Length: 193
Image 1: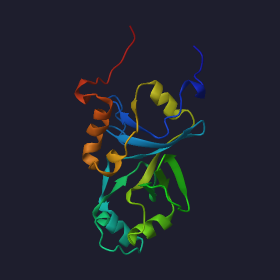
Image 2 (image 1 turned 180 degrees about the vertical axis):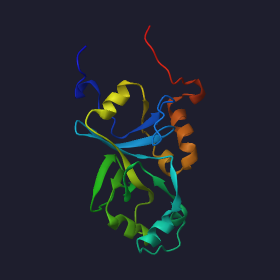
Image 3 (image 1 turned 45 degrees about the vertical axis):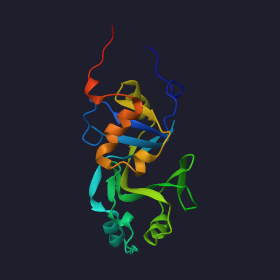
């Protein structure tokens, strides 16, 4: 048996990962992850369906930013993953011009600099955004191995409504519907004939 190379697994950057029932990891079981970067150096993404117990308004207050009482302050901060849980990440559209932004797909960026939060607190940030503390990270080849072991389903993103219009608790079901899959029909086991 030959070792798998990076060429065996195309990049899933800009796609969703849906955890298969066999994935029982406490951080990722039952999760939907948006992959922001995936290369031979590793991968990173944001869990989209794990709200924290903190609102964006509370987060802004904790970092000394005053909101102008707009409804985005009531949005819940997400638990983006187990890596750097004290660091904030903003998934947003449009991309804009912020200090530290990765354009993931057309019109959608991931920013980790404070300037986007400052602008958002004043109502001058991106039109739509979500905030996560922490991110999901994979070392080189790790996500490729998990994909090869059928731990994740991948879903191309054609519409960002899932991120900004679907409540976090409904995102897993919505991601499955994007595939036309009923999660009740999935099995945690697989085999070879």
